[in-house]
Each structure stands twice: as C-alpha cells, then as structure tokens.
Image (cartoon, rainbow, N blue to C red; front, side):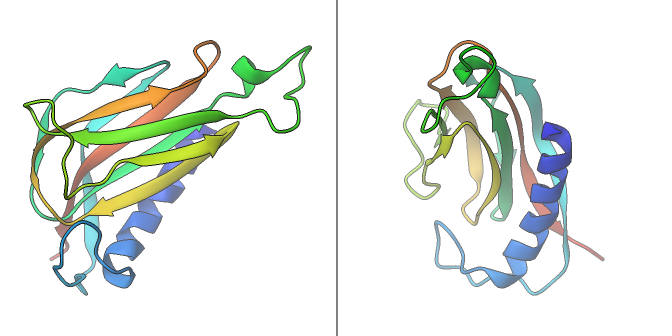
Length: 147
C-alpha cells in the first residue's frame, strides 16, 4: 500500500512542477512536461540519514509512512494518536538547506510530495517519533523535461 501511495504522489509531483508556485527559489514553474528520475529510493523504519545525492534546480521528495502498528493498543489506534514524520534537506556539511525547507507531517499514516527549485548536493535526514512498528518509503531525485 505504501508503494501505491508513493507512485500516486510522484505522479502528482509531475503536475505540481507545472501548476504550483515554486518552492525555495523565485524561478518560474516549468510548463514543459517532466519525468521523475529517482536518485534516492529507500524503505526503512526509525530515524535515518540517506546517502548524499546531487540534483539540478528542479527536484522532488516523495514519501509515505505508516505508524499504525506502533501506535495500536490491543489492535486499535487510539483516537488522536499520531506520529510526527519529518524530512530535512541537509547539505554535506550537516547544515539544513535554507532554500529547501524541512517538512513535518503528523498522523498515524501519511504521504506526499515536495518539489524544490534549488539544486545542489544534499542528503535527507528522516525522523519519525514512534520507534516501534513504523515503516516509511522515500524517493528523491531530479525532475527532467520530456522531449
């Protein structure tokens, strides 16, 4: 289920590049159709730092996470129970990227895509508050114009 949600999110990222105001920098959105090429494609649980990757100006981070197993009590997730899932784009020197803002999402599960317009060499710091029974998938990479 996490992979299906992430695939849907990546398709949405292709639309976001053409329709949404740019994040991070003042460059205008591209009207050229694009394809996503993942540099990072990992699954895991708990906190993790990815390998470094290099992207040009238009790139994406797609994610899906599920903490329901870790939050469940007697097989049921209590009302209001949630995890906080955070992705921080960091430079190789360990400092957060100012142009590529971090993102946090709270919930028992969630997914989404961020599109950035400032390239460079980065790694992703993934943090999730529930330590037992959580899973996540992250894909990140360049958005390339078709044609």
